[in-house]
Image (tube, rainbow, N blue to C red; front, top):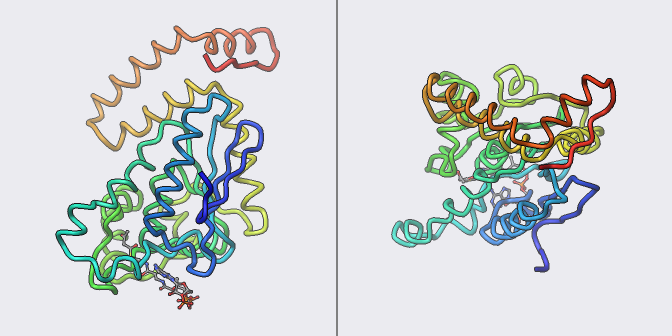
Amino acid sequence: MAYENILVETRGRVALVTLNRPAQLNALCNALIAELNHALDGFEADPGIGCIVLTGSEKAFAAGADIKEMQDRTHPEFYMADPFGEWDRVGRRRKPIIAAVAGFALGGGCELAMMCDFILAADTAKFGQPEIKLGVIPGAGGTQRLTRAVGKAKAMELCLTGRMMDAAEAERAGLVARIVPAADLLDEALKTAGIIAGMSLPVAVVAKEAVERAFETTLQEGIRFERRVFYGLFATHDQKEGMGAFVEKRKPSFEHR
Ligand code: CAA
């Protein structure tokens, strides 16, 4: 498939997807989301890929869902087409995905970043859910994921006023894992992805699944899940290799099995 709205490359075991509609500040049209999912389907199926970085441009990670594409939709059209069902697929990926965010991450852009496993933010990043200014509310998980990430008070304020928060505020609030200088963002994201891709892939997938459980279930159930998969990892080659390498004072060589 030839992509028109994203750029895709691989660097060793890391895949890099760059949102590429610069004239529209990477507004997330349906075609872009379809291309993104097509690319992610390929990376999920490729055993040679261990981590994915999703980024945008210097000015915008993404300025939201494409308002021009949406504005004339009717309720039945929107309801039946359910475009955000396709967005959801991004958030259900099994391999780790890092969002590397510079500039605007607004509306659907913020929601897309939050579907990733964590956000590395440039010091230029700006996050917000400004949909209320358009006469709507976030529709791709913003009211839920933002609230879980930053708590009710700040999520409520952001969703009701539409104001943006800068990278420092987003880090303080727990929305982003780390802030880096804008010029270093991509290098840092690729370096971090390289570290993750160097771990055992099945173990990384299990770790991701276990952390996600914390948002979906009770503490007791989550702990039970964690314990079961922890014990289960002793069926892997990479557990033997990882612990063996520690004891033998050498670097582990994971085989992703
Ligand atoms: N959809 C479609 N086009 C968009 C867009 C969007 N979300 N955001 C920006 N663009 C387009 C602009 O229309 C403009 O195109 P033209 O040159 O053809 O007019 C181009 O990108 C550049 O934008 P601006 O001239 O506005 O750039 P700026 O630097 O002055 O402002 C901005 C930047 C503050 C991000 C401003 O563009 C903006 O407010 N964008 C909309 C943000 C927004 O409301 N996002 C939420 C969308 S709804 C949504 O996402 C629903 C959901 O939950 C999924």
